[in-house]
Image (cartoon, rainbow, N blue to C red):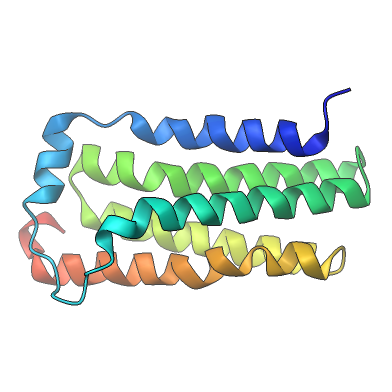
Length: 157
């Protein structure tokens, strides 16, 4: 049997690969937006999200190992995947629609679902909940950054 951490890691990776469906035209639009001066960490965002996804996968694995195969565990796995899909959809949808408002809505939705996930996971495992903290801290930063981009680029909001 394949270890749960390998299956969860593979699913996390496959969902994350979905963010690569971006055309050069879309990237060009985003690259031309004005940015706040404090946005010096932009080159590190892919690394930050990679760490967050690894933490999320580790959290899911802890939950899975607590009660493998139960209905509640499967529902939580679905919620983990939903949070990741929404997170990964942020860039392609925002860029395809050339709408910062879309990005902000997706970012806020992902954060709210991650809060729900953390609340559901807390009674099962404190460690699994702690592994969700990087997402819960970073997601609002990304959403706030998108709001700042909207303010600086009202024609692209």
